[in-house]
Length: 489
Image (cartoon, rainbow, N blue to C red; front, side, top):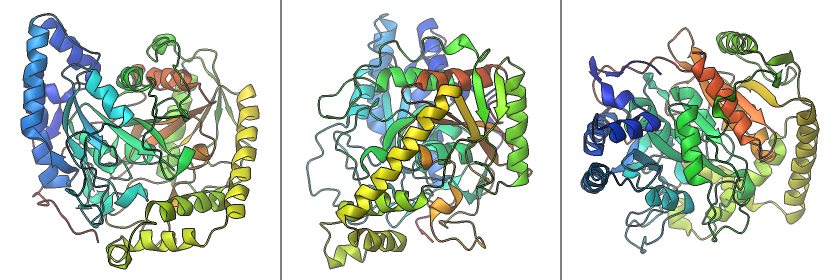
């Protein structure tokens, strides 16, 4: 994205830089990690007042890490791929020295020792990224908007009255506004891609197993760990950090071989691309969203890809997804007593009740649907390297609601039909911003590829960015602060 990040009329150039550019600036001496982290911390404070994207901002710790990084760069001895790059962490990950509250009033912040890093956090720490703070999530990451009984509503930088999406909403807001160049999120049904689409950044759900997970998610292999970033180059750099073995995950896929930055500039000439604007008419896409996405796909075809409008053989797997999702929620809350259950998000309690009534046969039947879906997509990708869809059929709707007002729907899956099917199949999928609707809200294009073809997803996304097809103007938030807005609505 070109230009600076406008914020109430103020432009701070260093905040417009992604991770790759920051590292290059440190190397050439244009600025130091202290400069970048101080600017990001100021932005984070402003973002928190206006949009409520943080659970915790660690000013003292971040500045100490930045000073140590600056000393290494001064000596010409950087100690990692992300040395000095400011990053944020979704508040579902274990992080040494700070509690993981997961948006819930049922978690005791001082009742246990927080002494271990999750694999993704450990890899960032090994590469000397600078941790700015922890970002907001709905309770236990259960829905695709970010509000919770603990932290209230997280708002969209392109319209504070709109949702940021979720469940990695705080992370998407942080990256979109310059409060850290990178963030890590989790995606069990769209939770990286949905907020990325609503907030105008890139969100990647890697192939399941490429980024190790510990502790294991209650949602099993539905839940992937992936980056939110300014662009594909930054996401590829972050994947080179995250996709490293960790013995605590018995289901990890193993070392990925060549790095994710390898071949990033290969372009799309000759790629076989399928464009499915509505999954065969199963999804009603808002006209402005459809138009923005189609325009981006047409421009992509101009880069030499073979683009065909066609649909994968998919029947909406929402019932099977709900079975697995509700079962995970029931498992995550199984140790709570009546007093704690009363503290939960009401929607979460409803899903928990559905999950407690499931049988083992119900779960096995849902897994069979996953297997058939995966088989069909594997066959589809023998013919097509990439599948393109809208990330979502709509842009960001009013904050504080799980579904668009007046839609008549009850659950978030009603408006995420393009995302959760590819959690069922464990494929890589990314959302890239390709324009704005008539209200100035970002529109996302989803890029899907076969399992372990993550580099193809990133290469396609990078081609979109280098051609000026991906990327949207930076948000320019005006108006009074929300003062944290801790009412979940």
